[in-house]
Each structure stands twice: as structure tokens, then as C-alpha cells.
Image (tube, rainbow, N blue to C red; front, side):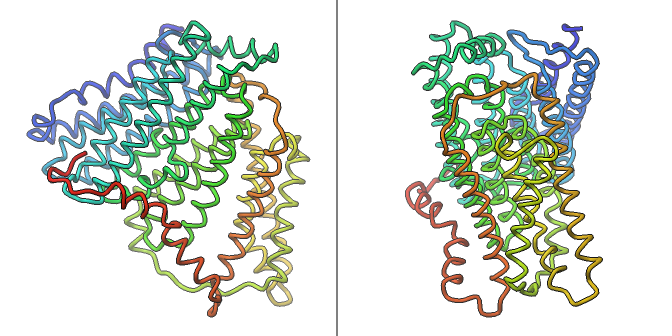
Amino acid sequence: MTTLVTTLAALCPLLLLLPGLVPAAVADRAPGRMRSGVTAAAAAAAALAAAAAIVLAVTGRAVPGALVHFDSVSATMLVLVSAIGAVVADYSRRYLDGDPGQGRFMKWLALTLASVLALVVAGNLLLLAFAWVATSLCLHRLLLFYGERPGAVLAARKKFIAARAGDAALIAAIAIAWVVFGTLEIAGLKASAAELAGRGEWSFSIHAIALLLAFAAILKSAQFPAHGWLVEVMETPTPVSALLHAGIVNAGGYLIVRLADLVALSAGALDLLLVVGAATAVIGAAVMLTQTSVKVSLAWSTVAQMGFMVMQLGLGAFAAALLHIIAHALYKANAFLSSGGVVAARRPGRLPPLPKRVLLPALAGSVAMVLAVGAALGMPAGEALGPTVLGCVLVMALVPTLATGAAAARGSTAFALRAWAMAGMVALLWFGLQSGASLLFGPALPGGTAPRFVLAPVLSVLVVLAFAALLVLNVARRSATPGRLLGALYVHLVNGFYVNAALNARLARPSSKGVD
């Protein structure tokens, strides 16, 4: 049975590698065959991934190995990536029909998916690093599919620079791990890390490995201020934006989850992830609220969501972060693929303002409800900071509805009760999902982290307060006379605090060939 699982998992990237090896010139001369071949390979990979996951679920035993490490974490990501990849491949077959470069696009799509799938199932750090670099290089070709567009070239250049810095950090971490542990197999590293955690040993080398891994993850997952490329990839075909969520922009989070036993040994690495992730989540969400382009707004939303994911990793909530990766990948890939319909149906209009006398109590009530539900379900805030923070932000999204019910005329008691019941149900479902994720992924993840100081709870409270402030500002923006201060802030947010503009001024340069 072990051989069967390993074979099924290994075949997933290999199936997509075959059409990916077709030369670009040949692919463009036979776009029909490339469409059929890549779509069939992606569908077959998804079927094999599902079969491998079913076998793992039936046997209940993880399959560690030198080439393939297959457990609940890698099985879930394998199914996720292959399923989204199959959908994107089928969408690309129709979306680019008639484009002279469709065959070349399908080639690089296949190679990108093959690289991500290899990254997911890798059983040793050398294979993981090879797939990590290959994913970035193959994606680079997709970002430059329309290489004559200056915007596409600039975005690809920024991504290339950030990716190479992340590659260097990962390779350095692997070199130190080899010296310290004498093995690069993931199973062996997990066992050694668990032994060190049991003895309470945290050497300088361990901190160096964890910090380098954290740095690589931050760059890979478009954290502030290395986020600019992600919000500027609109010059690429829409399937590329969807493909980014099939384990590419999420790859930094997956790296930390996969090597969580090592990262959990370093409080410094966790604090770095926490601070950067929290800042990225708040900034990304604030800027997203001001964007008028659907696709740009979705991209800024991804920046914010990746910030949440990294913040949860920093809080040691590895199972919650993996659940976040899954949920975000599914809904955001769908959002990009259907963005054209959203644009066609969008009819913007001004929403009525809400009085502060009901808005602020509704905010406080929503947070109190999340804290109460979490405590009742055995996940108090002190023990489950990550799920609690994100749960508060999730339920706060219902505050306008809650406040509307409270501000409505007499006779709306039934509406108010239904609104609060809905908020309570959302909180129950949220913590239920968190409990399920802990049960599913818990055996593959560390049981605890290195001792932490007060930074984690303090920063968690500040994040909740920041999102409450964003909600209040967004409601205040509905006013016909929002005020000069709010108007000035709006201008800065629209421009993303000018970070991209500053980087673009340094990186933009003429390119006669349109490639980097």
C-alpha cells in the first residue's frame, strides 16, 4: 500500500511534465494538441491525487520517504493544487482559443503545475528547493506571456528579484540544516526537531534556519513591502491570476507548514512572521477598499489574505493557516476566473451611512460573541489566538448588517435577532472548521512552539482594533461630506502608500525585447 501511495503521488507532477517538455516553437505550431494534452494531463493528475488521498484516508498511515513525503498536509495540498490546475487548464483552453501563443502558454502552464505538485510531495529539501525555484522560473514565463507590454515586464522583473532573494534564503537554510542534522529528508528533520523541542534546546543554528525559512516564505507569499508584483500582474492572461492561487503565492505558507517542526523552535522566526503578516494584512485590506478595478481589488485582497496566513503561522496556528490556504485558494481562483462576469454585472452605488451610536456597540458585540463562542467550544483566545483573531475579523464583516438592524425603525426586532443569530452561526461554523483542521492536520504538525513573550497577544489585539477602525472608516466614507482628513487618507490608500511607485521608479527601464 505504501508503494501504491508513493507511485500515485509521484505520477501527478510527472504527467504534467511530459507536455511541458514540448519545445515552445513546436507547441505554437500545434495548439490543438497542446490544449488537449495539457488539459488531459491536468485532469489525470487531479484524479490520481484524489485516489492517493483516499488510500491515505483508508489506511490512516503517513508515508514518509526520501522522494515523496505523503501525509494529511501534502495530500490535502496535492488535491487542492491539482484540482485548481485542472480547472485553470480547461479554462485556458477556451480563454486563449485563437491566440497565436496558446500552445506556448499551455506548455508553461503544464511546467508550472508540475513544479508546484513536485514541491507539495517532495520528501527531501533538495527536491523541494529544486521545485521551489522551478515554480518561480516557469511562472516568470507566464507573467511575460505578453512581453511587449511594459506593465507585464515590470511586474515580472519585480517578482524575479524577490524570488531570487527568497531562493537564496531557502538554499542557505538547507545548507545549515545539512550541517546541523546530517540529513535533508523531511521525516528525519521532523524527528530531530521533535527531539530538540523535547529537550528544550534552541541553538543559534536552529534560529538561523528558522529565520531564513521565514524570510523565504515572506518573499514568496508577497508580503509587504515585496507585494508590488502581485498587484501588477493584470497584464497577464486571467488564467495566470487564478493559477497564482494554486500553491504559488501560497507556497511560502506551505513551506512553513511543511517545516513547522523546525520553525516552531525559534520564537524570533515566529515573531518575524507575526509582525510582517499583521502589517501586510492591515495594509492590504485598507488599500483593497479603495480600488475601483475588480481584478486589482482582488489582487489587493490576496495580499491581505496572505498577510493573515503568515500572521497565523507567526502565532503558531499552523493548522489554521493551512485551512486558510485551502479556503482562500478555492474562492479566489474562482473569483478571478469569473471576474469578467462581475465587471459586467457591477453597478456601484452609494450605501446609506450608519450612526456611530449603533455601529460601535455592534462592533463590540461581534468581538464579544466570537470570544464567547470560542471559549464555549474549548478554543479560548489565550490558547487559540490565530483562529480568534481571524474569527473576529470575519464576524466583524457582518457588523453593517447588525448595525442596520439596530438602527431600523420599531418592529425590526425579528430582523435584528436574525442578524445576530446569523453572526453566531458564522462564529460556530468558523471554530468548528478550526477544530476539524486541528484533528485532520494535527498529527503532521508540531504540538507547540518555543516560549513566546507578550508580542503575540498584544499584536493580535492591535490587529483586531485596526480592522475595526477600517470598518468605521469605510462606513464613514459613505457620508456625502467625509471630511478633508478622510479624503487625504483615501488618496494615499488608492496609491498603496506609494511603495510600488518608489520601486517602479528604480526598476523601470527600457527593454527592447520585452523580456527580463
